[in-house]
Image (cartoon, rainbow, N blue to C red):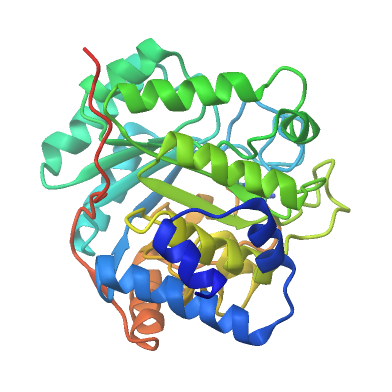
Length: 351
Ligand code: 5AD
Ligand code: FES
């Protein structure tokens, strides 16, 4: 049996095969990897691509991650936050465009207290009972996650960024740590959220061993969604002069993830689309099945700049919706109007 069909069948990969695949220059092996991953995705999800409307609610952040353009230390960033009404307007527009999931993402901005955030979440759920609400607001207390869940939030995205503590410490200042990150993820899972995690491919100091540890951590967490994208430098961060992550390596990682997690939701991310002209399409051809177009008001889009040259910062949501539909159809897929819930067994609440 080939190494690819072995991984596919066992849904396991050992560290030697993993390194072999990441470093291979063997076109035949890579073609087999890609085809297998795409087949697995099609077997689970057909040619349907789920979409989530991403609303970037604030670029104000108390954290200072070395890679991120909206870190608090970036004095050149123009800061903004969206009001409850602006967020609700984005959702209404998104609903009309066929979105049935809204992702509210922002920096760790204290303005969005539990009271403020619970009110926004319940207002969205009241206005759009057919929609799922996903939050991506960073690390909060377990009590906060519980309150937001109670208010109607269905899902939470929090990338672990790297599962290796020493590597984590090279990407973040000492005030942040991996143990806390993991604790947040397990708390979210226990509270009944569909959890999304993930990491950047090619972040500074990342090794093949680190990526393997990321896989092992994901196998332990069993998230509903796994989001990865290449690291892309931002000119006003400590990593301004670091090399961008490799698109090829990111695509290989997507394919491996698909073989290990056949039912997972795997987005073809904006970072992937930024790093290569048809990056998102290629992501889908490597087993991704989700797209997260931007629904934020065009006036603030340029300000949510995690990395340089981010795509879709000038287009209206409706324009991106049409553009994406066309791109996806060009590779034989189509976008569905659906909440796009995970097919994974959601971790049963202990209590
Ligand atoms: N390049 C690529 N991805 C980035 N993110 C943050 N900064 C960058 C960057 N410079 C990713 C992180 C974060 C997500 C919202 O965006 O993984 O979790
Ligand atoms: Fe935004 Fe193509 S997806 S312009």
